[in-house]
Image (cartoon, rainbow, N blue to C red; front, side, top):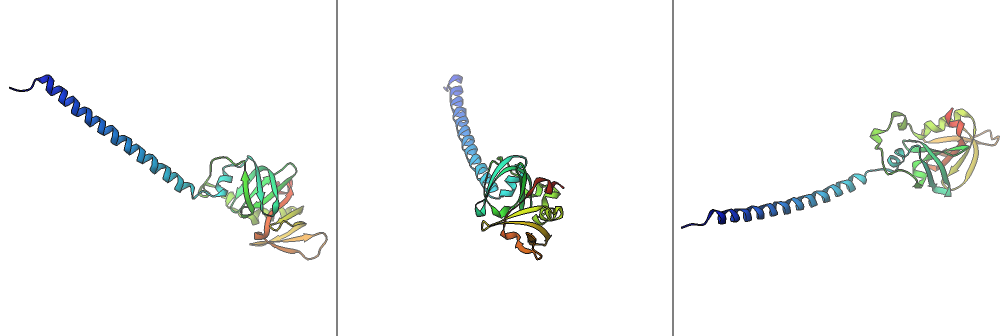
Length: 191
């Protein structure tokens, strides 16, 4: 006559079991594809992270910066701004243009995108150099070629600064692009 109810139940159980198994396989395949997609997006997003963004997230940390011209700075990263950063040692402070940084050691794992920076961090290197000029303190210019110049800063233009060596009546002009770092006493930048 026909199959027993017990036989029909086991057939349905096998069918549902196979469907459950297929569903689990599809879920695992989807999860794997999703994880690959997430990894790819993370790589693509990280490709837009700048050194400045990594440094901004590391303000307050002890860092070592290796600069063009052979200068190595160790100190606390005190400020990061558009195009420059400030590293403080025990007695001195260094204004460092970002393009002069060859390597940075000690920054944290995070990054702060420039859109999230505070307004004061959008001030260019000219602002920091004007503050040093106003302090009228002796400074040391370290140029990208490795040369050192003990000077007093004069006026600061859009892309250069005036620097008086010794008791010279006329200043030397130094392009910002020539600077590896500008050293001053810490209190000259805090004024």
